[in-house]
Image (cartoon, rainbow, N blue to C red; front, top):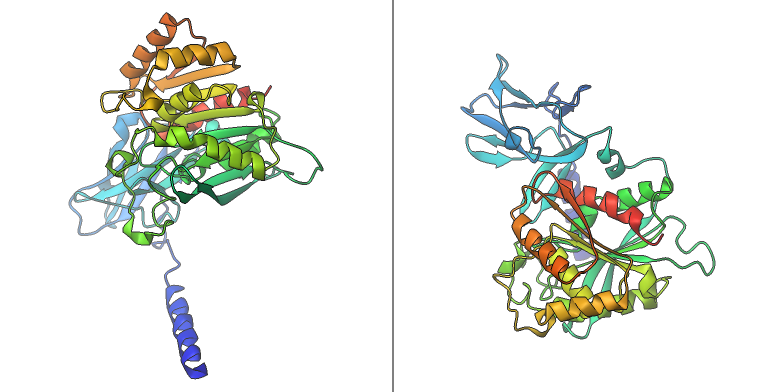
Length: 391
């Protein structure tokens, strides 16, 4: 038995040694992406046998499409116009096949797409990066859900110095992802920990706990992190049986609040709780708040998925919204904040909802930005929303 165990360990070590050979993201002297002093960005890739090479990104200029040109060394190059400060994602498309930039080791996954990333500094992107400030922590936490019949996972940000001061308690922001997301979305794509660290360090936001649950009620956790392991692949929530806008998540949400209040140093009252979400998470925010008016004093709808055409409004969680909104207003709250881009495919649904609120004489604040349904807007909405909380 000892010999067998030794052979297994040796085999593992051999695999590790072999795996360590693949450590370089460089192709000689090629630098890509290169963020230039004028905030333009240059992309380069060597592809001697390609006939057409493009870069496709999420910036606004040219709808994010850049046609690359090849030089005498078979290096294809494209330089963008000046870009606003942001975190950008992109892919290189070679003869119609999209892939990562081979010289850039930094990537992000958004639903099933993995893209290369870069930052353009000098504005909001400064908040998305690590600075020499006190840092909080992000934990992945499992909690039991009696209503959903499973253990489920969420990400929890705790601010710098959390737990170091005796008896100090904190307010809580519950931050919800969109369709196709999971408990990692706001951490990875939203850069929540970096945003909160930097806002808190500058005195712009109160130290707070940020709870990011998984909004797919039929799943335990992010793809690859459930008991299904790799059989559960990233997909949009409407394609996951039992998960899309059926009222189960909204009804079970108080379990999450109770778990956080039992296990963290919270101030367990309405005045010290906030709830916000993007897209599907904005839809969830509306109906969680409407069904539980005693829980939250601050609510934020970011590009909220308020198109009700595919929603079963006979579900108890979705019935009698006007009456529930009246009860929410009667219960009192500090902030009901709505934001959307003027090119968002959900823009009209949000305008219809604003008129509904006006007819109900329901108090809210509205922010309209440029562009569409994308993470650049949602990160910037958080930069605006978080400093409004718990003042």
